[in-house]
Image (tube, rainbow, N blue to C red; front, top):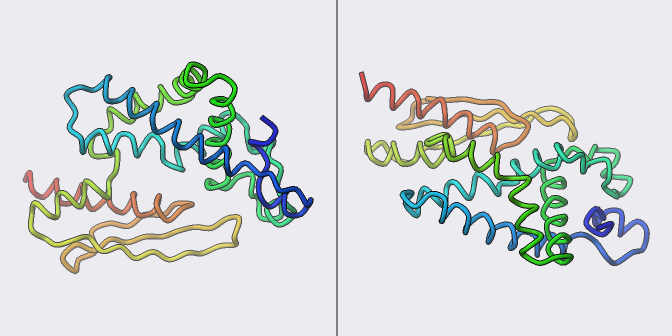
Length: 210
């Protein structure tokens, strides 16, 4: 399990070749297989597209990073000096990769019998919450579907970044038919764009129902 917490920056600085990247690769596939089978069986009335959105929401980097924070994985990570200086133990990308590596390590220990139990333990509440979100599973995809149906063309996103590396703030705007319909701020580009898309979606759907 120690290898699951070993980031490449630490391995490079300490002359070690082994990192958590191979475990991350395995964990990603194991996670996808377990979640896909579960939602396929659990939600028989959902279409392929709806299942794909649900799976994407559950196995996203942001979701895995939040789970890693809940499990307090950040303090356990072995990071190089550069990552420590930029608060790598709080970065979504590093935490999500470590979470996948932990899943990979659990799978090596006990196969799907054990990794299945572990994945369900950490993600079943997330799956239940995501399944109830509807359009909110992926606001960008939902906005794309609405603008296509209304023949308004594809949404156009613009994003700017401010703040130091360890406290980045992303501000996004989305234009539909040359009109800014939504904006949002978040600690990641994806998060900011999702918030902007949500605002635009609500504006279009609200207008269409008046």
